[in-house]
Length: 235
Ligand code: APR
Ligand code: ZN
Image (cartoon, rainbow, N blue to C red; front, side, top):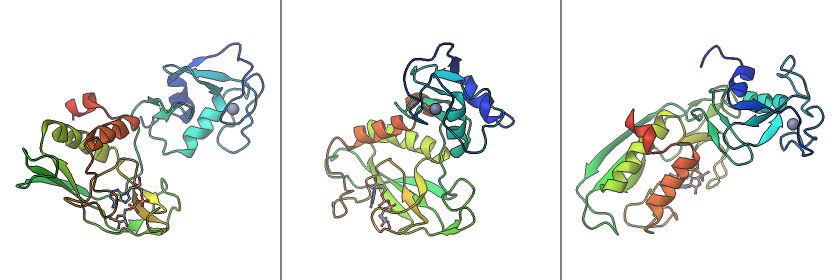
């Protein structure tokens, strides 16, 4: 994707709208019938302020300049997510810091899964310096509680979740840098919207997930990041 300008990336996912509807652009809150209300940098020379586009799959409409501004404020990975319905265009990636993901099977059964062994995932992320994709570039970030251990049943569904988590890890979507809602600490590594079971047989933190719906919830959270079974086939 290198070499494509933000405008070219955004336009790839858009159809041109010739007569915009009498609705507001939900990015700038100005009418789609008039110019974009975005006043910041990065959109000078991008089409006309009046240009409006329709996202090709979900159909939501925005000023072209507003979409380009939104793209510029993200991690510019060639993908775009509709701010209204979260439909993902292209391949979404995140800002997870460098580290490693390992897993192995341990000869114990998780509560609720007496007939199979257990997959233990170990995430290791060291502290470091924030990059341009993080909230405070150039500033250090801390990394608490690593290595973090997580558990999946070694069942068909558990192995499917593992395959998708490996894709999510490669796309840097499992962790982020920000403020921990558990500890309140800022500039630290935090989980990013995919809930892992981090306790084997207890539920002291509320992340023991003894409930049988946990794996389906994780699959749903992965889908929201644009990751489905098709993604793991060509991995
Ligand atoms: N296990 C699994 N998920 C968790 C945990 C945990 N122990 N704690 C929080 N989450 C989930 C939250 O429900 C939320 O959706 O991660 C998301 C981000 O929560 P934060 O509290 O901001 O994340 P983080 O700081 O990474 O919290 C993890 O557990 O391992 C310890 O030292 C670590 O105190 C930290 C906490
Ligand atoms: Zn707008």
